[in-house]
Length: 146
Image (cartoon, rainbow, N blue to C red; front, side, top):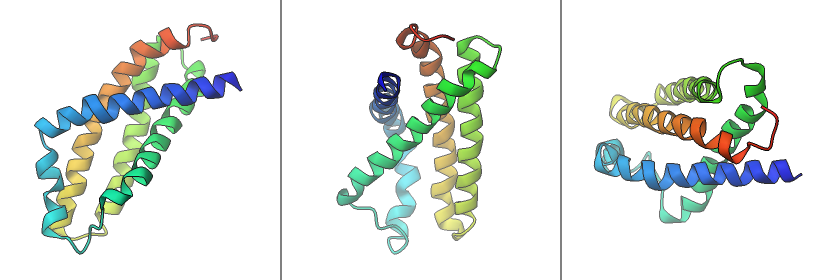
């Protein structure tokens, strides 16, 4: 039970890094262009401030899932923890890109821009969190058998 709690808190830490550090990078790079279709196609996007709690929950759920898969699956690879992190986060990155592409193809070309930027954002988010996890996980979970 303690391991589950520790993994939950660790996933929260990664999500906080994702939200604040990576969120800042997004703001100064492509955030405005990414969200431009929301203004242009208001009828297709209905995100409001009231949707933030559920959005945060689903974002946290994404990172919790990646953390769980990494935690239990990394034992099956014979690389350093850093490279295991790159592999697992890379697999989830590919899955995320595929799923985003599936949804993207249901919309017109103007709205697809949002999804293309989401894919670009995934490069940033999964890449940075893979690096962070590769360095942070061994410190936080040093008491667990690797």
